Length: 233
Image 1 (cartoon, rainbow, N blue to C red):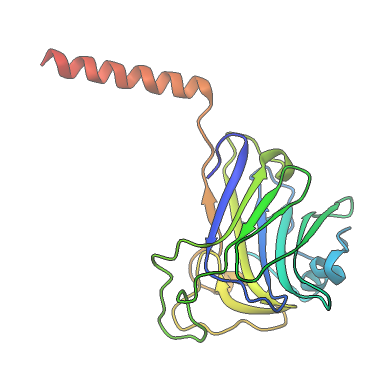
Image 2 (image 1 turned 30 degrees about the vertical axis):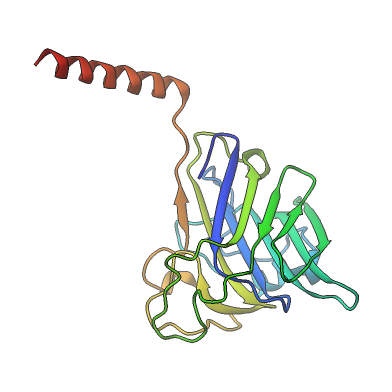
């Protein structure tokens, strides 16, 4: 939800601790985003992940053109179990903000980026959605990844309608775990040029902005008038 200051996100489930990535893209609704993702982004973190997947031909739904991305991954780095995070503004003039922290695999983890972005990952659920293409449900799974992102970081405002897309990927091999969902029975999407327009439904979700103060006052006055009419009856 958009609380007027931050975009707040929960993605339930687990993230394998083998450096698989949970990748989120943000479309602030103001235009100027990237679809297809393409290359030429200043982001070079995580072995140039954004340009790698953009070079493979990643194309979003027609109604989705992100200006920024955030992704997290965790695993053993040779010394410690570590959670890494990257927030990237897209484009040739974009920037990366990175963070990492050693983690205890048996406990929830928190990762702050120092620019107001705060994230947490709780991997204690082991039921959740299973692998494969059969019917499975994450209903009732209340643990997973959370993020609080200042609206200013993604170029949004209190009234913005923000779209969020994303997926789980191992390197550049994309799974079938996609925000917005894929048609039942869809297997892992794999490597190569992935075009979400070929799948039914939207591979993103929409977060409505909070009403402007003037709108809220007007709405409140309307409700008061409605209540007064009810009392007179």
